[in-house]
Length: 240
Image (cartoon, rainbow, N blue to C red; front, side, top):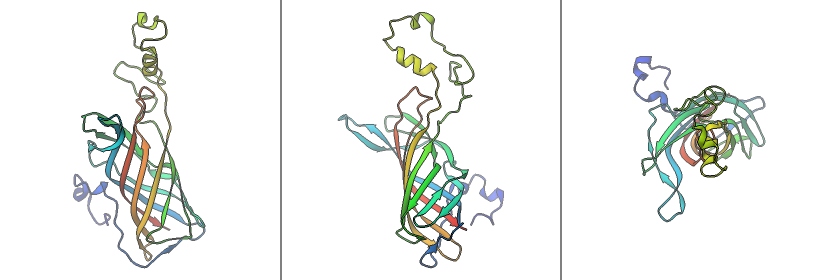
C-alpha cells in the first residue's frame, strides 16, 4: 500500500505511522510448518493510564498523546509454529518511546514495545474471530549512558550529587528517595497483549485485527514506581 508512494509524498504526512489495512479475501490462512510472520505492525489508537481518582480509587483515565507520529511498531518478524499457533518475536522496530499526558497535566513516558513476545492461540489457521496473545518484556525507557540533570548515570557520570551532610543523617528522612535517585538501575518489566483477528486475505497471506496491551511505564531508572498503561489499537501481519 505504501510502496508506490515517493519519499516526498510520505514525508510529514503521518502515513509512515499507519499500519497497512487488510482487504477481506477468503476465509482462513493455514499455518504450515516453517512459516514466518513478517511485517507485523501495531498501531495504538487509545492510551489509558491507571491513576488514583479523587476517591482514592485506582482506575484507567484517558490521556492526551504528546509524541508525534512515531509511536507505531512495525516490520516485526518471527517464526510461527502450528497447533497451537505460536509466534515468537525476533526482530523489527519493536519498541518506541512514547509520552502521554494525564488530566492533571502529569507527563507519563513509557517504552511501547512487544520485545520477546511469545503469543499463542488454539488452532492451526488464522480466521476471523481467532484470538491469541501472550507476555513480552518491557526494557527500561532510558539506557545506562543517560545522565540525569545532575549528571548522574548508570555506568557513567557522578555516583551521587547530594550534599554530604544530607547523607550523614540517621538513615531515615528521605534517604531512600535520595538513594533511589542516585542508584540508577536498568529495570525490565513484563507486559501482556491480547489480539483478535477480524480480517484475512488468503491470497496475500495477510491478517489484520485489534489488540489490547498492558504494560508498565518508565521508572526513571528505579527512582519512581511504574504506572500501568493500557493501549488499544489495530495490528497487521503477513504469513509467509
